[in-house]
Image 1 (spheres, rainbow, N blue to C red):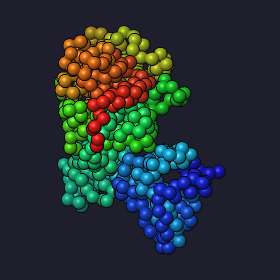
Image 2: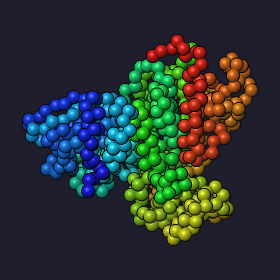
Image 3: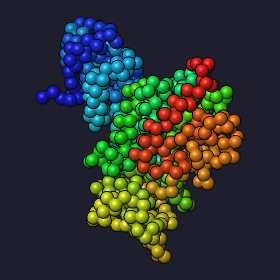
Image 4: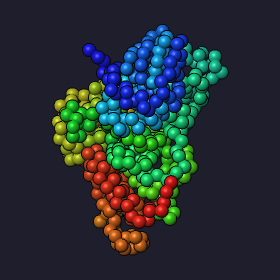
Length: 548
C-alpha cells in the first residue's frame, strides 16, 4: 500500500510539470536541499532518488524519494526554512521547479494540487514530531522563554525545548560556551549559530515566517490572520487579486488558541484551532497570497485613494483596499502585579504546550464562554485539578450546552460560581491564587491560571479615524452614524458596502466589527463575503489609471 505522505505522480502529471522546470542529472551524491535553507526548490525524481536526512541523526534516512515521487512540505509555499537535508543517490535525474513556478502549476492543475497539498500537510505533521529543528534553552518559569515558545508553537516552527530548570549539567555546558543562566533564553539556529535572548522579530526573520514585503501597490492588504482574515485571504487571492496578509503574532487569532472546536461545520469529530488556522494559512498561499508574521500595525493613512499602512519591520505598505481583521483580545485581570506572571503562570490560551507544562498540577480557568469551556475539558486530561472560575450563577449562561455537559461530567473539574480572582501571589512565578466566592476568600495552590474574559477590540492602529461603537468595535455598512458619513464626499454618491467602514475602501470583518457574532463560522463567512465588496470598490472609476 502506498504511503499517502509519499505518493507517486502519474506520467501525465510529470509531463505537465516539465513545462515549469528544468531537468538536471547528478552522477554523484549531491546535496539539493540543505537544512536551514529558507528558499529552496521542488524536485520530482525522474530516475534514481533523493535521500531525505534528519540533520541531527545523519545515519537515519527519513525516506528515499524514488521515481515520480517528489520532495518538499508546506514550508516550500511560504519560504520557511527547511528542516531536513536532501541528497541525491548516484546517477539521479531530477526535475527542478522554483517555488513561484510550482504555485502557478498548482493553480492550473487541480489533480496535481490535490496530490501535492495532501502530501505536504501529512509530511508537515509527521516531521514536526520527528525533527528537532531549532533548539531553545530557557526556564519554563521565564516569560521571555514562554513568549518565544508561544510564538514558535503557534507558527508551527519545529524546535526542541530544553528546560534549564530540569536539564542536569546544563550550567556546565553553558560555561563551555562562555554563557551563563543570565544569558537565557538562548536559541541555536539551523546553522548552529547561538542567539542570546532573541526577539520575536529576529525569530520570525531567521525561520522565514516573516518575509520581505514588496514595495508595490497591493489590491488588498489584510491586517489580521484569524479566521476572518484567512478566509478573506483565500477568497481574494483565489479570485486573482494581489493580496498581502500580515499579523502581529500568528495565524488563527483567538480561534487558534482553542484546543478543540467541535461545532464548526464539516468537522464532526472536531478540529483544533491551530490545525484550522494552519490549513487556512497553507490554502491562502496555494492561491498566491503573501503572508508575513510578525508585523505590528502602528498607523494607517489615506493618500489619493491609496492606503498607506505603517507597520513594524517593514517600509510603508501601500494598498488600494484594506481589511481590518484584527479581532479582539482577552482583557487582563484587574489585579496588582498581573503583568509579572504573564508567561510565568498566567496565560491567555490553552495549547498542547500548556498542557505539558501543567501536568499533575492544580490550574484555574477564568471565564464562562466557549473558549474557557474548551480549555477546561482539554486541560483536565493533564492537570490534577481544574477550577473553572465564573462570576455568573449559571455556567450555561454564555457557554454552549455540549461543553457544559462535559464539564459537569468531568470528575476533576470544579466550577466555582459567583466567584472571581482577587489576588495572585508568587516570587518569580505564580504560586498561589486567591479566589473570592460569594463573600468568602479561598486560597488555592494554583500554579497555572488561564484567563478568557472580556474581549476588547484590537483597533489602536486605526487611530480613532473611523466610526466605532462605545466599546471601540468598528461600525460598518448601515450601522455607520450619519455624521461620519457626511465627512466623506464619496458616500454622498453611494451607500457604504456591507462591511465597509466610514472610510471608503477600508473594510472590517470578524470580531473587530460591531455586532459580529463572535463565532469562527461567522468570521469565516464575513471574510469570504467581504471580497464581493472589494470587487465592487475596485471597479470604481478612481482606479482606472492606478497601476503598480
